Image 1: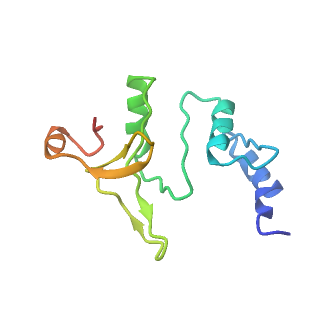
Image 2: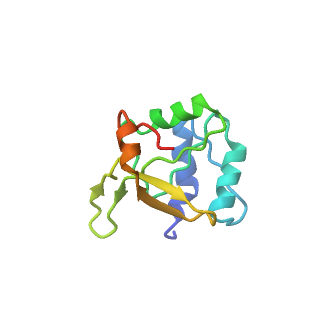
Length: 129
């Protein structure tokens, strides 16, 4: 049995017990973005969320994101992502006054919000525009 054997029937059996999860497989490796497109095309819910393996979902992380989508269905949201140190496996929460940004090449960077934006926010879960 190979290193990834648990991704076969063992995963299929586990997912079937979860009931609300639908396991979708491609016939060949397609890469991250195409896999997400396949997942989105097969999604049955009203909201699609992708979490990478390096993401740590914390208590209360989902409601602020879904609220933004409920207010405007054309919204794409990106949370501040806490992380786990790859050397020590220590959980490290992200500063709530950092925001993720994209440039025209779609490179992702984290930047501090301005002092004006910080003053306008009523709490750390409020969006930054």
